[in-house]
Length: 283
Image (cartoon, rainbow, N blue to C red; front, side, top):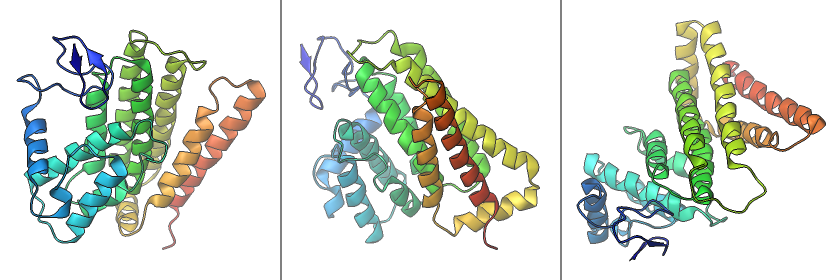
């Protein structure tokens, strides 16, 4: 049996990656860039952020890299790949650690790396690793991380085209997860994972529809103005509002008619607040 160095799960001798957490086992089948990245991180770059293992908890990872970059560390594609891999590793190591909220400063690090798309690249990394997970519980944890960080992307991107893409990608990822969750090793739970994944996909479909409505009702000049306006300001308010809307949407799972009506109204009020805030800046 092979024992995963990340989560300690025992896997078959011929396994290429851990069926519980999705971590690759060493060998020629593992992505070369991943192991080159970790080797570089472990060797260090002469600064504090380059020392120690790459797979630290997310908040610690983000804090280390943010400190190094703000100290003036030059960023090239190789360093960015190290940061990205560290962040994706940190996301998965934060699963099951309530203190490690997946939104912890990822958006602020992404804005420091303004020449790269860290937010969406981390989302792609989560989706890729989640496709190798073999247990329902771990897949649902990855889905939760993906939801949180998709909403966090609204703190980073201000162009509605980019945000619509975030929503469309989220719908696709959650639909893909829903298609395979029934084939995974189940976990005893009163909650239906399919229902939650449908709920997550529905939320981003509705949010994407709201964004499409803004695009359709605005001139290109107005859309450019709004994007530029919010680019010079913090978008944290957007992600906070949308997190509230997502929380209300989750309450639709397993609730009765009255509860669903209340949750739907609360969700729609939050979405209306997002639209009003974005389209009515204080000019």
